[in-house]
Amino acid sequence: MTGNFNIAIVGGGAAGLLTACRLVSLGIDKIAVIDGNKEMGRKINATGNGRCNLSNLVAEPEKYYCDDPAFLAKLFSKYDISQILTFIEKDLGIRLAYKDGLVYPATYKAETVTEALLDYCNDGGVKFVNNFKVTQCKHLYGRFMLNNDITATNLLVSAGGTASPKFGTDGSSYKIYESFAKPEDFAEPVPSLVQFKTLESDTRKLNGSRYDCSVSLVTANDTLATENGELMFTNYGVSGICAMNLSGKFGRYTKETGKDVYLSINFMPKCNVEEEVKFRLEKFTKRTPREALAGMLSADLLDVILARAQNDKDRIPEIIKNFRLKVMGTMGFDHAQVTSGGLKLSSINENMELKSTPGLFSAGEVINVDGPCGGFNLHWAWVSAFAAADGIAAAIKNG
Image (cartoon, helix red, strand yellow):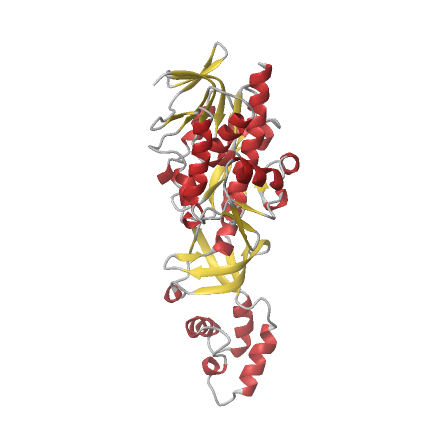
């Protein structure tokens, strides 16, 4: 396949497709979207368990990890959530639904979002190139050349990071920058929004059990971060949103320090545990501790807690509030929802253009920005797509 374009977009996911749509709306033509998969939008279709939680009403820059918070704040201020949701609803034609601050397509089907993006691109004459893996990128005579087949005046890299390689996001997007960026322009990628593997075997009997609790990521001396929500025990460790939201922090911290990290679980964060345990033990003196505490926590969990207490009733409250698990690692990029790390914000300008290479733009997960579960990462894809599209359009029109 050969072709000459104003802009070649490498990566037909959320950021790449919305950039193409935004460019069409700005009157730009000769747009190509290139993807290594046989179809566009594969990862979009898998988001939110197929329901596509596409944004969050509290998607604010403070919710994200990045290397340049001030830069991120400027982008979020320039492209606020109302502007983005209006484009999604009014231009793309996706009717939206809201649930506890989470934003979904009203159909609650991810395919609705993908189809709307593709239809808008088709209306604007965007060229789709599937099953095309970029293995070589050069810049010759003012144009980018991909695999000696496709050339374009401008290039957008939006092919994701390293998380969920089954969707084609296997880290190969970083290789496109090899001739243009320096190693220091990148933060080493680590898996984020991924399950933890833990050392202790006594929790394996809790496999599948879920608890509403508070979970902290801690070292021997410090608390690194805390999340509240549902935690699920597994046969390898723990899962659940509150644990997964801590995984990026774990990866970055251990890469930097190599120190041991633990999870500290408080199973009753809204309760005065000391008073509750004391009341029950004093009221039900004819019962065993397990019988006296029944109804406070599940029977299986009580068995584990009492075994850790080793018949010392005074230790029970502390174990309930500070149930420790040593983290041995995560389930890795294969199971991660997003990548933490990648191209640093500090290496690009506000048009999402690589400072060292005019005409080379970036958007989405390939950039060193990641947020928690709940639509935050798709929202970043939309914000960065808007910024990139405006930058690309300005470069073409001024070109």
